[in-house]
Image 1 (cartoon, rainbow, N blue to C red):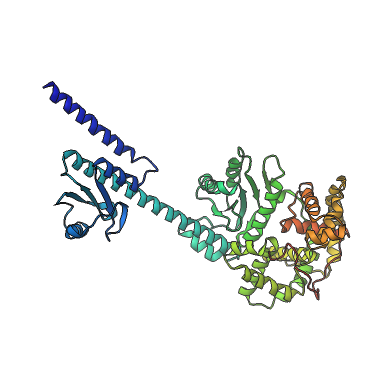
Image 2: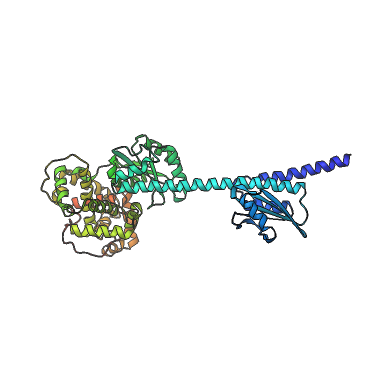
Length: 501
């Protein structure tokens, strides 16, 4: 009697051991292949999981010839399980509902009660794992689709198609773009941390913002929102992290999302030099605000007059592309707009031809950038004042403009390396360090180091080009440190390092 009880306890302990092992296979990170391999060891045989077509999903494939009809009946749902015996071979075939397939287990000896229970419970575990995998795949597919939809909405806003953007957004985020104005924020982190940052931005902003992985910069997350409170929520994310920065735009109309994006990137450059790692574009003075509005508007109208005869769609397309192409590289602009870089270059070359200018000249780029931004603000204003007849020299030599330019560039004078001379020469060379180095008689790396050293002093990014650099170029023009460009008959020169990369 005592012997039988001891044998029963040993069997129970042994049974509890395989059940615990099977439960362990339900932990996160375990795979169907591990479960099937464990089953083969547990029953001292072989096991194989097939899908409904007979393809092997996991395990060791068996010759299905002798039991092919049984396999077909199980897949078709006519029976749930079957047994088959042959010389030295005993099989169990069980339907696995989650995969619409069949688990086949083979042993050299008949299936006892323990082996049969192991097979039954393993099927349940496999179904749980397969359903969990299907759910995970579905969730990831939905997340990718939602992420692509957010990007599509952003790209529509970038080309000023606010009607289509609102229509697309209404399905998933009702009311999000039912607004006239919004702010754009750019959050920067390490590329490997961006996915987590995106999730945290989504959680922090709820349904009150459009959160997009930047298609051009793998370390950037773009956030478009009409809600003032979102800025505070985003600032709370960057506080405890050493390598996360935030740049925000001034409030702009939805049609000026591209301008707001450029402002946010510009502010992000300033954020790198701030102790709180955050900055807003409106926090500093910009040259266009120091020019007489009527004079600036009149000058802008004359500069861009060659574009006025274009069809509306073409006009908007060329202007939106050129604004981004001047702000960023052609490759980055193409990714943001969802077109090829050759398309970006072709559109910008058409604008060059119409304006009679050359975008390889940084001064020309800065002046056209000023005109495009001014023209965009005019499109969304109610200013009916008659345009004044002035030229570029009149705009740049006003008292406020000259005072701003001299104050800005004077910051560089404290450095014994003569950063001001290097920067002036580098700009005149089209932002090309090698050509500037030949003029200065130094190494190209020295030029780059000097320009990089000027960035925190001026609180503007220079080496990457864009609006920050153009402000510094305008300051040099206003101070008389550079020759003023014309917008007609410029001779094409060698492409510089900041154009159409």
